[in-house]
Length: 133
Image (tube, rainbow, N blue to C red; front, side, top):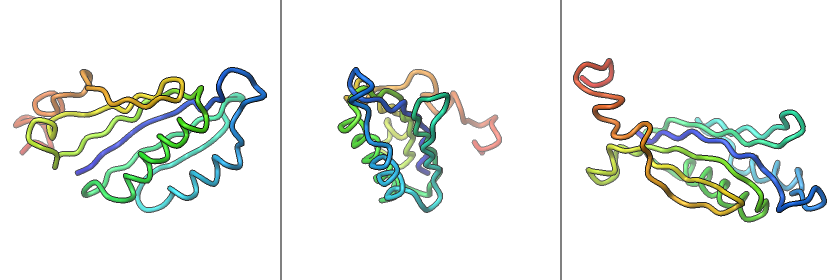
């Protein structure tokens, strides 16, 4: 399974005059929307936020579009920040037992390890859990 959940606060560099064009962002979101994923772009209390989530049978082009969207927003809205958590149980043995985090800070995207939900077994799943057998 491939699972992902995330949010981004979308902001221009440092001044209101540099805010990203909302129409461009809506077109980007629409191009990545579809399938069985949640992709939601909306204004909340005067700030623009992107929320994403999905649970797919495996990593696919649908998931890759969401990752590309997050990276693209970082490049066109360099004041953006947020997190995208993902878990791919088909990754190599050690990484398949961990969540990974894409962290967006000031538009820069970095991959980081997770200490909150990993290791998936035994922290989230195991012999005594409903999904662990």
